[in-house]
Length: 368
Image 1 (cartoon, rainbow, N blue to C red):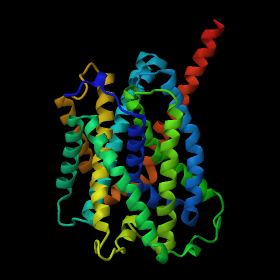
Image 2: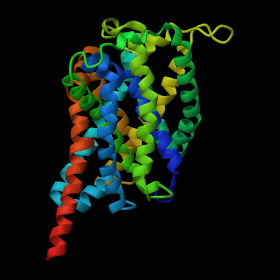
Image 3: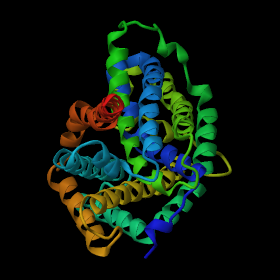
Image 4: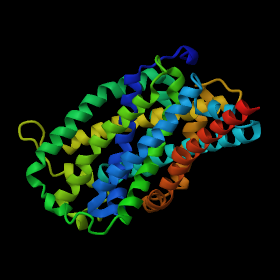
């Protein structure tokens, strides 16, 4: 088993991990939910999301710089007194569990609905949970290496797919701009910001960075890269299918890829998309599982990355995925109406409050 205290990762690796993590669920959840909220102006809502996220990521980075070498759970315990710090840390453990369960059930729905309709849901859930367990046991270096290999493939594939569908796109489908006013754009941006709230999990990796300075620049690199990567899918599916048809598609970006063939290379490029999605899902499931592992080990007197804790997380998240999100409709209702609010709370509101409390304590201590 790896020595947690000696573990070191580079800034580039954490940036790649962040981009890969957002991209995985972004194509399965964010694109469809954002279009459902903001319609043809989803791209404007995405730009507004990026602007709002800059401030949030600055807050998260500032917390990491104030307490270098500390992860999110230990930062909370430094800012809040014991009972409140412990309870809030426990709430973040629950949030990581929930994020992992939503991811697991979403990827399962993608596989069962779009790829393997004959395979039982429980089998897919258990298989991906085992992949997460395997990734955690192998250590951060293992799934980071996978992410480093996957990242250039994702970039190449995204550019190639966008160029290949260019002739099918009619950007007049995005008109009229602001046809429904600013309100759908505002609410759509909040929904997308809630999904980006999962990036708070990257703070669990801050103590392992070789260079722990300029964390805001690191976060900003993740945000800008993610912002560029999602402009194409958000506008592209509307330009290809039209808004009315997109609203009826379960996974719009995957539906778009299914119509692409590359003569002389592969008849249907969606097979490559499925492969990249599977590998990306492995990386994100492993990274959230590891963050959850570290959170529990920080909160309780447990050794990080121990076998029994990993088994408990894998079994627990599998049960949540199977019995709470027992069908795709239940998952869809939760994601569209509730999950983004949870993301806003834990990824946006609470970090801002923590920084505010630290600032107030600093002012109080300097006066007395």
